[in-house]
Amino acid sequence: MGHLSTIVTVFEDRLMQYAQESAKGISDAQFARLPQGSHGAIDTNHPAFIFGHLSVYPEMLMGLIGVEGATGMNSPDDFKTLFLHGNPCRDDPDGSIYPSKEVIMSHFFKTYKAGYAAIAEQTDDFLAQAMDKSENEFVSGFPSRGALSAFMLGAHPFLHIGQLSAWRRCMGLGPIF
Image 1 (cartoon, rainbow, N blue to C red):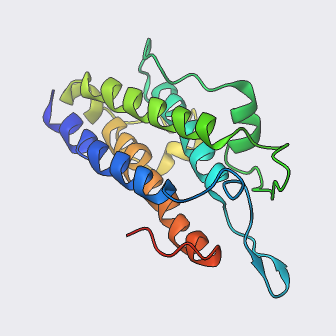
Image 2 (image 1 turned 30 degrees about the horizontal axis):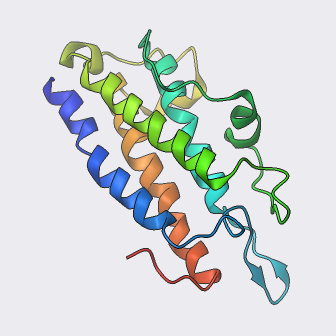
């Protein structure tokens, strides 16, 4: 493992623990629900959307940085339809919109473990290479494959899982830690 891949993969254990702790105590019935305030549903992301959204990005990352043959990240088509950037988070009181907590959480853990494993195999030279910014507008803010990988496997999941702390409080579950 190179130095740059170590910088990215150092997040793995912390992320897995943070995800497990944040999902603790959330029932299947609550998992895809929006909290209710005095004026109706609070427009925030619920756990089903957060973990489903995050679970599709390791696969996308591999495509953006040019890693071929990485396994364990293929998302079901309905995940891409429901969870890609720009799709709304919807309240799902009867469980008819989103997959179950077990399905979403399993896919989340599987894709992140596979993503970290794929990055661990990359050389420093590969991860230091500049991104081709003409191919995808999203990558324009990232100077290298390693920088994009650090964001997608580090900052991005921590940002979204952090949203759960507020959601949990709105649902009466208390903070994550």
